[in-house]
Length: 132
Image (tube, rainbow, N blue to C red; front, side, top):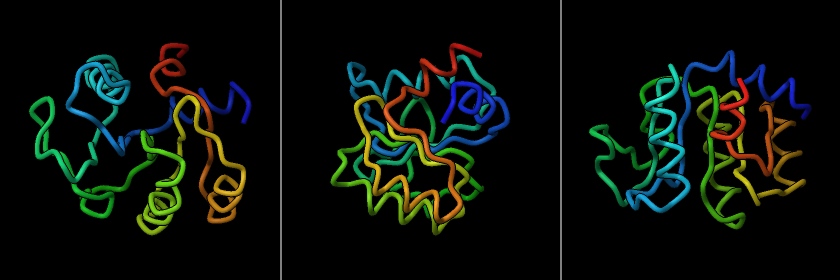
């Protein structure tokens, strides 16, 4: 996906779900979540079955529990956890599947594209958003 396509996705998206968000402030998922809440107009939803609340917002146990359509699923989980998250992303009709920095899997990406999702791999949503 080209840089322009990434920026176009970010400029048109309205909702983002961060899967694997952490309540530990030193974790990248926590930093990206805080950045998006403070510096964007996105409706940001958090997914982690081990946390109930973060930054004063409800944290959902799964993507299926979020009551709105999600434009971008931003994943902070290990590659071996991705197939299940991708399957759930497809089931909820998400628009894009975003694998954070250091995460890349061409087989998963092809499955996602075949299901109609836009795929971003090995990029940080916060870093890309700062380019807007």
